[in-house]
Image: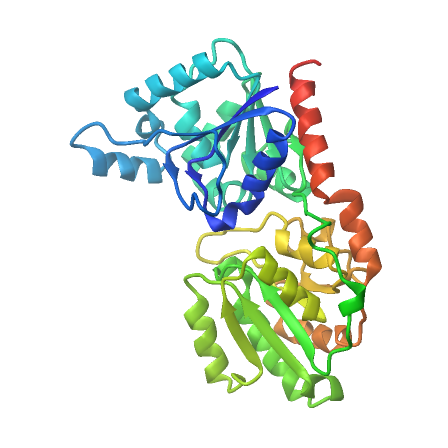
Length: 385
């Protein structure tokens, strides 16, 4: 197959899952990536990329940007971009077009006349299937595209699919579910290095944004330390990653006087992530629905990777996470923002050992080859092959 991928920015470090999907698909098929802006080429060195800037065409550029923010369809139309897209499609002759993120897909879809009825897939990930749905105009646009025969929506969890249907006032949506895929050969525990830690290490690897719930994890960890139990005395927490709320998390740790118990190593590569997981005992991820914008997770890739490393998980009943983490089996789940229960579960889970069943679940449902095969089958189904 010949597959054209559109992603507005190619690529941000937080979008590694899209890059990995493109790499895997290109092993068997011809893949062309179209983007408005190429970034981090050294980190994401894919060769077949066409960069077409979405530049504003007139003196009303600031107005157009405001219209885009408010989901006004007019603001997504651009004659230069439209011409470039038409030429690329004509020359490349894709069998499939796959766009990522509902809102960002509009840049492509409003400038492409699909006269040949090429199957178009739209992957909804998180922000575009939660916060953006607060906009009436965005909901109207999604409904309109969902009515088109050439459009094939994809959601990262059953929860997200139902959430969007509810927000749109629809009983159901004709859409596919595609769980993210994890590289289980890379994220694999090395038994010869599985040395018993003197410390009990709680680990989170994620961006520092509101929906990642660092504030509640830190406050719960503080309460857990105050128990003074044999386990809590030996406990440490590592919060890896970067983002706009990292400094506020550091400030909170200082305020609670637990800086000697919590470390912030910053951004880590996948190799660094694996090393941290190798040394950790428990993986934590207190996902929440953002109060400021209503943003939600899909299913965090980091949890899948940690489960592939056989780590017990402490997380929340949030979005699609219960589709991955079964409470009391793969770890513990608590209600969002429940600091008391989260603290109690830290005490309980600190006694858990590595969980081979966690890796088995990822192998069965969340492995990258399973992901790729499912996506390929969705393409073939749309082509009636």
